[in-house]
Length: 133
Image 1 (tube, rainbow, N blue to C red):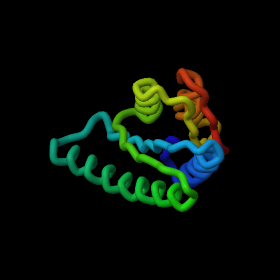
Image 2 (image 1 turned 180 degrees about the vertical axis):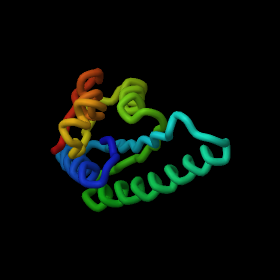
Image 3 (image 1 turned 135 degrees about the vertical axis):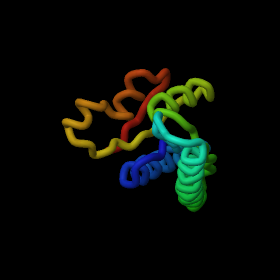
Image 4 (image 1 turned 60 degrees about the vertical axis):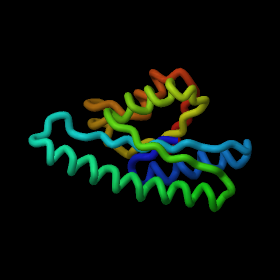
């Protein structure tokens, strides 16, 4: 399960935990720290990384606790890079069988101009992708 924005994260996690519980499977949840491509000094980059790590540590702990409370084992991994690309690389490297993603509520214009993570992952992934609205 890919964990990103708050409402989409909660819905995707709940759906993935329900599936894992039903099939008696464990989950891996990933959060992707997407740092700006152009940053100033090395100290600024390190500060951004530390901030992202702290944020995802909290998100990961909450996800692990939520899954555990429903009898599901969950491992949390923080990836770095462009969100969709990082998810695709991880899924291929780990031979993931199913990816569960939440769909963010971006406007039509934003989706048209930028695309969406769920669209990109579903188009390019080797495995089944479940998009939770």
